Image 1 (cartoon, rainbow, N blue to C red):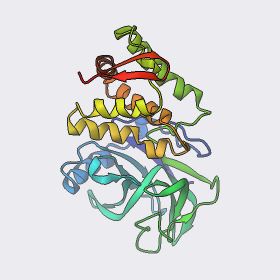
Image 2 (cartoon, one colour; image 1 turned 30 degrees about the vertical axis):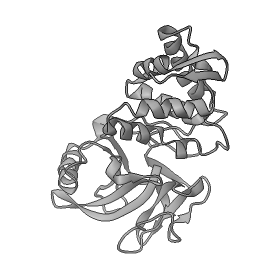
Image 3 (tube, rainbow, N blue to C red; image 1 turned 90 degrees about the horizontal axis):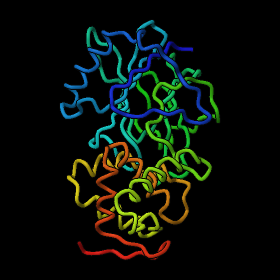
Length: 287
C-alpha cells in the first residue's frame, strides 16, 4: 500500500463514510516542505483560492517522492456535479500540474491497483444529473489521469475496492436511517425558536413552508454568504435519497446555518415573519 499523508487546509468537517477505508495520519509526520511549497504553488495557480482546498499526499508511482492530490472547494471550482481535483507532481522545489479532474466529490481514494505504474484513483461521482452516486476508478494512461470521471473513461470501481482514503468527505449524506445527524440539527433549531418566540410555534412549519422560510432568509444575506450556505448544504447531493418533500433540504440548510454561526439570525428571521396556530398551519407576514 502507498504511504499516505493527509493534510486539511480548509475549514471543513471530515466524517467517515460507510464502505470506504480511512487513512490515518499523525500530524507530526506531515512534511513541512511539501505543505509550504504547495501553498505557494496554489496561490500562483489561483490567487483567489486562498485556503479553500483540501490536500493529501501519496507516492502514486512508487518513485519514493510524494505526489499531491488537491480538492478545490471554492465556488469558482465547484458546481452541481462536484468540485475540481488536481493531481500534482514535484518539480524541483515546486509543483507541476499532471491532471485537472472535474466533477469530483470525496471520498478521494488511492486504490491498490496500478495502471502504467501509477496507482488508480477512486473519486465519488454524483449530482449534475448523475443519480445515484458511484465511485469512479481513474486509471493512468502513461501521461495523465482522466479529466472527467463521469465520462466513459472513468469506469465504475468494483464495490469496496481495496484502497486508502486520501481525502475524506466534507459533508454527510443525510438519510432516514441517520438518526444522529437528523436529531442534532432539528433539536438545535427547535430549541432556538422556542427560546426566541415560543408563542409563534414556527417549529410547526412543514414541507413547502421550509422552502419559503429558507429562501426568504437567504435573500437577506450577502451573496458571498449565500454561496457558502449553498456549498455546505449541497442538498442535491446530501438529500439524493429524498423522493418528495422538503424535510432533508431544511435539515441540510440548518446544518449550514449552524456551521456558519447563523442559526440565531435564521430563527430571528423566522420569528419575525412566521406564525403557526397548529402543525403545518402557518401564516407568513410581510414584515
